Image (cartoon, helix red, strand yellow):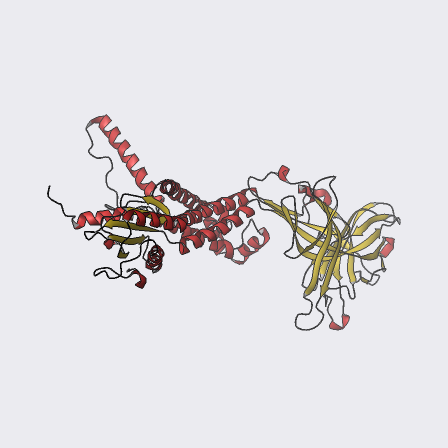
Length: 578
């Protein structure tokens, strides 16, 4: 039988088989990019039309699915998702700060209707953002699932057989030795296993493969993106976030009625609130007194006691900025501080109508506060029921030499309570909600002095305000600090963090780990010596592959020493060619 020569096409096919499945990346499809008719030839009649329509629908569905699950479309959707988050960062969002969003609408009356139609005031719940989000989620799953199964198949498979001509591979070296072929192959198999290669022994060669973690890292990165998307979605759907102002000595129970402001996701149930509680034992704040940073907080911490569950042990914690209390899956952040003047109001009969601290709303960085006191349970000197209201300012540090009623420093250096009084209807019986920081004087009359000027008085701690016409008194008993806390429950934060860390690990693995294959062939030559060939093939061209191949050849020398004077052998010590 005549000896057949290997054609170049067969050699190319042989080398291609050796490099197959070095990656789980889907191969780019060739052929017509724009689909035509998928239904083929349409037969006459209604049945022909029905069959043709079915084939056409299935064909189009498959084409759309292939486009959606391609890596190109996934990258485009990821880019679009990044662009979609920009307006959510620049434009006030109703779900985050409804007041700020409403003020923005009033300040931009021309753009506001356009933004409303585009959903830019609620980007993350808009239809177009959800569409990008769901399409990206579907695309990633469509990419990952078949790629994962392909990778699992590669893990279960064995390295391919050596190509007929190893000289065609990008990294190659050869030499002759007196050792027997079987001895060389056994030594090569042992060496490659010691270097953590997967090894396959054939008749006259040893095939090996290494670097599977590169593809594992690639898949880990894409899976991590899905984890982060799911975490983001769950965080938006089941999140809860509320704020509560607590005066020193008072407590908070994690119930819906205890919050001053509360927002939650669409799937959140108030029954999911964990029954923890805490008390504000004290608040400590110190401020820089000199220099350009005068008034900047140096110490800003709340000392609290808390219970993780009713009847549980009482624990202590100091909450600082960016150092929240973590309890029962929630985080309690310290976000604000102010002062609550403690007052006692007596009516015209001399009875106590109101007593307690009155939290005031800060207006500036020096904690100048607006103060409102509402006294609905009041009787005048004739024992007739009436309402009493006070409004004014609390100033921690009053300096009259500045000719300003604003505080000059946030600490309690010279505290004053400046109030004016009203009588009439507070409007509490109307059933409409009212802000505790605003006094509606539309149905009230201001107290006047004997000269007809509005009645007002600046009080120090211990001072008493006596209302005209025997209407009662107000005593300034003391000052208590208050703190505002934000209780946040984000169920997806842990998963999002884990996904982000895993994504970084996956990217590092896909960038720094090289997938490669190495073959060692040993056959007896015509002169009785053994011809040793070592060749390597990587997923991509890399300078490290020839270096690694040369290192393997040198490590194989003790078991396959080269002959001293071969006329046609290469010197592997000079490195494998690339």
